[in-house]
Image (cartoon, rainbow, N blue to C red; front, side, top):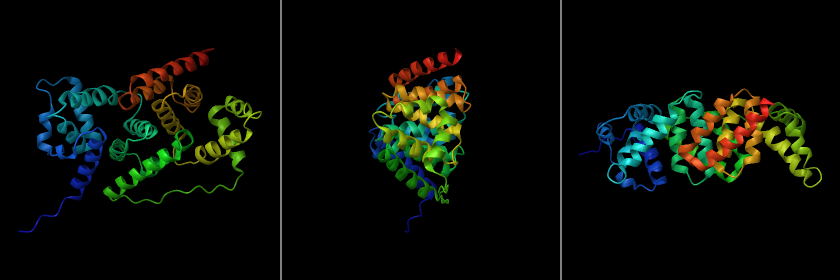
Length: 302
């Protein structure tokens, strides 16, 4: 008897879900669910939150999300219910940010924390499902470098490569070609995003670390922010999500929440970005970020 060939899509989903399960300490051996069996993870009495969350989970992740919830049924069924009800039914279903923006914020928050490869892969796949372009995903990971460093970004790009290969995605990666002076174009972008306050921060370094200030202008703004393949709005969503999840970044959050307002995000959308981080980085870091946001909003009213 010959073995039937495996469905590539089924294999890809299993790989993604298996990675996500490993990231939460669940053995891949538990990953035995089938689409028809996934409903058994549903509580006997469904709440509106559960139904709403389950529909969203299936929309953004297909069978792999359902399989993760099902895999928890024999060891932590309430944890699976919390994922559905809270992360998806409560948070992901909220208005003011669309699903593409929410997935970019989530990828940024997970990448910023490091050691989250399974979840990063799961959410890169979800981002593709809801319409985020591969080039935008890579651009979001490049954008994280000035804030979280190269190692975390490189690890996440490696995960993205695997997801793209599993899905059969190929694309021509963009390469920046701008012959202008890096410092000059960085200074222009810094003023555009952060206003005069950004220049004040750079100038405050002149008496102790002038080269550090120059690197911020040339690399962060001249090289990274200047790239056109992610909109200013989405860059700030990624920045705020990453800084919030990383923690202990109040001064930087203050600058970049202000920058988010400068590029057109409303205070409500900034707060929505912070709420989106809760399921992935926890309440304490988000509460700290909300405190910073409150200060920025109050200063803008003066």
